[in-house]
Length: 499
RNA sequence: GGCCCCGUCGUCUAGCCAGGUCCAGGACACAUGCCUUUCACGCAUGCAACACGGGUUCGAAUCCCGUCGGGGUCACCA
Image (cartoon, rainbow, N blue to C red; front, side, top):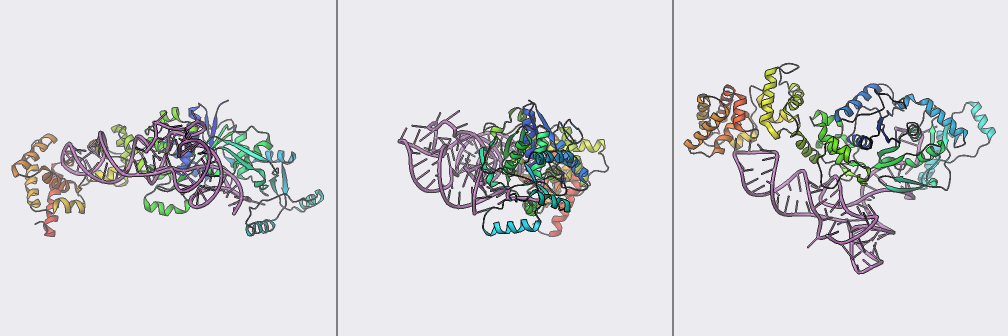
């Protein structure tokens, strides 16, 4: 039998990285076993704009390279893949369970249940709904009156349910701990524990891999599978993703706080930052999963080859952006120049550093030279702005710290004047010649190379850090360098602290 | 509160199921040094953990019990 896994996002438009990881584990398991991965949209309680939100989610999966064999856009033989379009299936299943006596009509009122819950709360015990004994006549009368009813599953008492979870191991759960749960609301809409089991059964899902918050929910679902006479899928509950540096679960309520700390929790934020899909994929796979305790870098193909559920950790993993960033650097080293140029363009455009919509040939050539000069310093595509902005502008903003450290020193303005002359005279104005000229200058003037190179770097680029100086001088060009030196000298003169 | 899951360096983890080879291995981060015109890369070194307490055993990170801590669930949410 072919292994089939699924991921069922609700169409909010956002993909939490924890969710992406769950989807990834499902996808990896399916691909490892040459099985199928299914996408099912969990829109049972959503209203409008679902399509738009779904598109965003699909785009996210496409970006990171998770493809689906059945689901939105691609269809499949066990559709529809929107739960909102599967109402008939749920209705039929519910009717069967009423017929077989597993499910009954519950005419209880909101007020009655609220009272029971309050009592349970007071007595510090769990609230569990149990079937109220009512006569057939009474039920018939209620129905004739048009009194609304929910459909509830009658949980069999005194049984011990055993789940053979592929990650958590054997977990036992007493049915006495489970209240009679609602499967269909009075308005006919199904509830998660019911719809999910019905769908998994109908779609012939063989492995349900999901977040561990569903572990307890699995037991009512087990009962539904059994009542339906459906074959039971295997279950694997993966631990949650905790906040960086903590064991506490990431919380939606703390989003603003994370934002402040620079912690990114949504997939689109990583895309916007210019991360590489292969790096995020690698990172997410290693978060809670390991191969041999040694290997850190995995390509997509290696992940598919080596991923197994028994290597998934049973305890929570906390999100580690430092590790992601390192992996990002590792993967960026493997990216060809052409793709780097493509990756960097949107960021330059956003900053208004390119003339038009698409870069001209000469702009592309310039970007290419900048990227080559940047080398390994470019970790994410957005780094082009932080590290290389000065290549694309006429004027430069001098970094105060760099100015203080390299320019506000005795004799620097005078030296800059001499270096300006040197740049003016160096012929040809190329890397090798410039390098020799600056070396000769340092030697002749009795200065250490660092005392010449660093001020010159700050004067011509505005920054204390960056690519090799001669790369910068050449790419920025003679005239622009000289204008910037003039600007630097003017700035130093004005403040009068150049002595 | 009942029930369920989880607890190895700051972090990701190996080791745990089949107790000794583990005074606990790898990686990120951090620190130091080398390379070097800065930064980044690279190389080297260092710092750093079996949550706690009992028990079983010749021997426990590994098995058992308890405590503490984290998480989930107990909805006509998903």
